[in-house]
Image 1 (cartoon, one colour):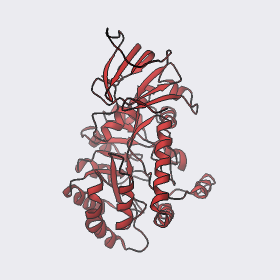
Image 2: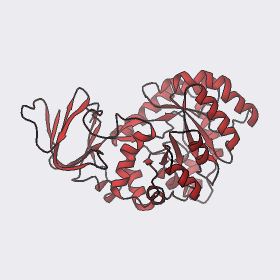
Image 3: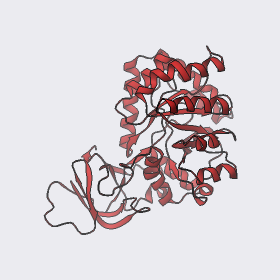
Image 4: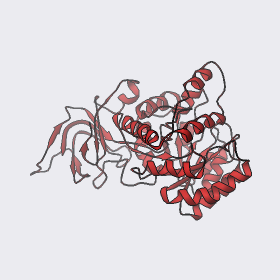
Length: 378
């Protein structure tokens, strides 16, 4: 598949890697060539982009896609002034436990398809709405088409357990059951969820089982999450809303990506993280949707890009890069998030001449065509 007559091609190689009046060639599910002068002898299917922009497929590195029910009434109450807390998670836990595997899979498939339509070609998903050994394993098993699955047994303490008993369960029997079905382990390190000592113990147990840590860190208030993430070599510290200079310095001097989730702040009327501060300090930043039924019920990365530019002081270039290559870095993937030769042929054709329009025209459905592994998906 040759896509030519591209107005603006974003490759993320190097930096944003922008080419104008460009073309890209896919072969065997990978990028075979990019440039401005099509090689002689090129044959096969051809798509005339008509001056439109082409960008890498979005990489959504933080999602909670396995659940049942919704929390629309809770959202409405927040819009009337009720503050967001971690406690609402238990409502979704009850609904998820009661749901059939078929119903959970249907909802999961619906959300993945919804994300794909808005340009997301790679998604990460977590468990965390079962909070029993069987339900956590079930959540990870039914998401098996995804390469990036995260064990989040440590989401909140369910009502039938004390905190100490539940931490023991998560580190032991639950981890044993879930580790074979996951690549990552995550903990919600926050008041109302798990403290620093509990977080470190659970992540350390996961590392011993071969899982790489991620951390829900510093979302609702300042806490130890960012520092623990860096200390344990986590792939990402997610949220990073309330950070000190020491937190920012720690991230800047580590391989831990700061994954920012503006949909959560939008849906909870909370303070947005200061992306400008992080980027200027040298922190690697990713943008993700944080799709979940309580605090960010969206799969739409273009929406998150527009918020990041308007509310978090990112430039359009930075936001698009964070939603593509940044997400890949948060997942420690080198095969996605860019369109250099050898990368997976995951690309999005925009109904616009430039990627800047993703922030410039918020709310407008600009995704015209999506390619995954070189295949036209619609």
